[in-house]
Length: 125
View 1 (cartoon, rainbow, N blue to C red):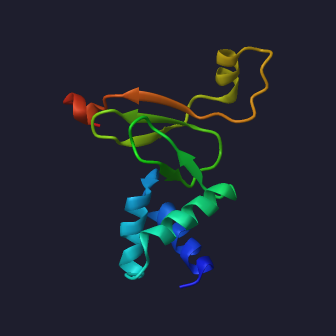
View 2 (cartoon, rainbow, N blue to C red):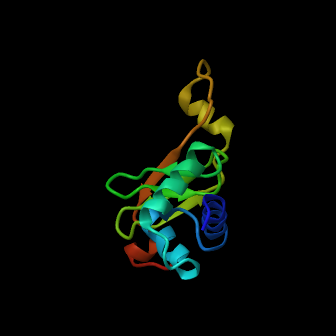
């Protein structure tokens, strides 16, 4: 399988099978169609895609790196118990600007709220 086919498959997985996936999860999904692919190949392609700006690396304290197909600036919430990640869509650039001060020029942002989700807290999500 060529690097281009590998990258297309990885992008398809990120588009269709879930957001915020770890390398291991992308590897598991890729193996369904390409059983002989190596995890190193998945790592290499994810990193190339991230370096090219086609996907975004996400870092959460104590968790493996995750990858997000949405490269636009946006926020996340991360459950410290079940390690689920979800987008937060309603914090706009003006609100972020208020937090940073009027003298700062925002070039990008990665904002995360660490939570105990409703499922882990005993409610329904």
